[in-house]
Each structure stands twice: as structure tokens, then as C-alpha cells.
Length: 519
Image (cartoon, rainbow, N blue to C red; front, side, top):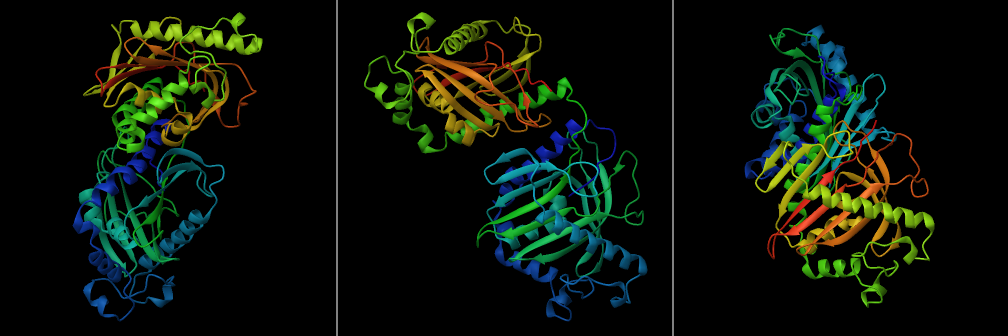
């Protein structure tokens, strides 16, 4: 759906809200629907499709109450004498919208911004011709055949009952077999109060065995007058969805929703966005990772740790390509003659950051604000010395040994592949066994556009059998120059995490998000 929401809402808030709603549609709604056997019923889906695409004078035609016109044909007004001139005009508008939808679907997304992603799901934001504001293009791989998905998203009764975004989703008039008039009213969505629209909708089969449908606004009070407290929104030509098969059991659906990213980022929105991200890290990301046997593998975790903490001249040292210096020792520059003066300076900075991290960890949180919590998880917001803005301190109890958790959060390849917050998380240089230079670039996070940094990172064992690691920004274009459209953020001393064991099978991780987002 491509809709101009109308009403004054900061565009950053609008983008975050709509992007999250689109992501939730693919990540939560569809998977939950498909757990219901009735909704996966292939025969019911095929019957639904046959009724929607019944050819003229077919037996299936008798089972529906709309006129017998094929949905695969663009319908000129002169060929439908029984339809009013007004409805013929609306049908032509719907057909034009369908044409624009297909053009939008086939259009390149070069220059579009990735707002949110997960395995099989992408939410992009960008510009389309003739629309002044930026729109969303969302796509998701769904583990069901095209017919099943088409039935669910086209069935008005199902949508009104099961899609929490809608209060009303009603077919007001079926003009012909392939064109109908809808009245829709949304429920409140975050800061967005309810909206309503009257739309004309049409649908057609799509190449490769798929389906497509479009809906656009029409000016009409006949089917739903504007209501008190409800803002009347507007959907231009080209909104809708396209479903294409991937194989017999899976398909990909792509649809469109508005997003205009104008406006600045209120601090309240920033805190909400980052707080939610931290909470999700403990509440969703880690539990999902730990469902994968490979990621829980204790032997692999121990091996990872042994390589990260191999003492000088040990056998483990030969398995890595960094210099043989123990990470448990603060390293004065004079003891490492083979390291450049610049890298020695960076290592001393990292060691200072580690000292500040430990001080932050041991500091009282009196006066901090609880932003979000659940069993075993806390996200606090407050002030630290020498940092002007408020920062986050998040902690979570994780049902895995310290070594397993340390391996996952320290493995750059794993982080880049599995942590949706990052587009790039790369080790650019290993200076010694315990110090390395990183280049990181985040994905868009709600209203926060991509940020990048070059950092120096160091890690050490922590008291009680735990681990700690810190990373802080360094000024360097050698490992990653500022990129067009990417804001260079800054992480001061003291950011990082501490992992402490609770017992043999559980640990608690505490991390500090202290970055100055900038921009």
C-alpha cells in the first residue's frame, strides 16, 4: 500500500512506525496465520482463486455475485454497458493503478535504503516517480504456495478479523468479477491515529504463476463518510502487492507503503528506538541464535576462546595470524618494538577504554531510568561521567555458558551475518593477540539512518571466570573512509560489554551503548 497518511506526525516517527509494521507483517503475522491448518488449506485456496478468476459464463461464475468479466482483461468503458459511467471511470483508474504497480515492481531499487531486514525479509525506503514523498517497498519469503497467500491477503473478512492494523476492511460493492470498492479504517499504530479510505481494488494473474492486486483511493462519501476523529488518508496509483512463486511450497510477496523521512530525530524517538533495539537483542536475537546447535557448541566456543587468549609461544598461537601477546596484560609501547608508534598509541587508547568500561560496570545505577524490562532483562538510561548525553546500560541473563556468549558477540563474521543492526562488521587489522581495528556500518534503525565508525577493540578475561571487551572510535580513513549518505558516529571511551557467569549453564551480559549517533 502506498498511502499519504496526512496529519502532522514527525516523518522520522512515521518512518519508524510504518517500517516496523511492515516488518511485523512478514515476521510475525504471516507465520502465525500459517500455523492454522484451515488457513493453509490448499483446496480452499484454489477454490478462492477460481472464484476470483472465473472466466465469463463459467460454472464458477454462478457461485459469486459479481458480473462475469475476466480480471486479466483491461476493461474499456464501452464494453460494459450495464455499468454506470462513474463505475466505469473508477475501473479505468484501477487499471491504470495496476499498470503503475507492475512498473513499480519491475523498477530497480538502486539508491533505496534498507530500513529493516531479516532472513527472507527486506523493508526498503525510496522514491517513485510522481510521488513527492518516499515510500516503502517491503518483501518477504512466505512458506506457503501463491494461492494460499493470495487468499489470505485478499479475503476481506479474514483481514478484518486477523490483521491487527485494521478495524474495518469491507467490500462495499463488487462492480465486476475483478473490480470492487473497499472501505478501510486502520487501528491506531504507534503515534499514528486511525485513518480511513474508500478505495477501488483490482487484481490479475501475474507472470510465472503469481498474482498481483492494487488499490487506490477514490473520492466518495457513498461508501463511508469521513468520521469524527478519523483522518481521511489517500493512496495514489501504484500501491498494492505482487506474489511470485519460488517453488511449489514457497512464494515471495512484495508490497508498498508510504514513508517520508523528512524531519529531525527527537531525543525521545532516539531513546525509544535504541532502547527497543537493545531489548530485542536480549529478548529475540540471542534466544533465536541459541536454538541453533552449532552456535551452542561448547567445544567450538572453548576453541574460540583459546585462540583469543592464547599465551605467548603456545600451541594455540600457531592457529591465528596475529602477534603472540597475551590479552590479559596491559601492553606498554616500549615492550612491543615491532609495532608502529601509531598502533601503540591506539592500543593504549583501547586499554584506557577498558579501564573506563570496568568503572562503568561497577558504578551504581541510582538515578537511572528503566526504559524497558522483562524477566532477566533490563534496559536503563542515564548519565556517565565525561559524556554529556544520556547513554544505555542493558543487561540480560542468557541461558548459555560464558564461552558460548563471548564467542558469538566477538566473532565478526557471525555478527555481520546474524545481527540485523549491522551491514558491515569487519576486522581490518589484528595488531596483537588482544587488540584489533574494526570497521562497522549499521543498517537503518527506525528513524536512524546508517552510521559507520572505525574502532579499536580489546578484550580481557574478567573476574569470576567471565570476559569483557571494549571498543572506541579512532580517527582513521585508512580502514574505511566516510561514505556518501552514511553519518560517521563516535563511540567514546567506556563502551563495550561484560559477561559474568551465574552458574555452569548461564551467564549475565551487560553492555553499554555510549555512541554519539550524530546527524
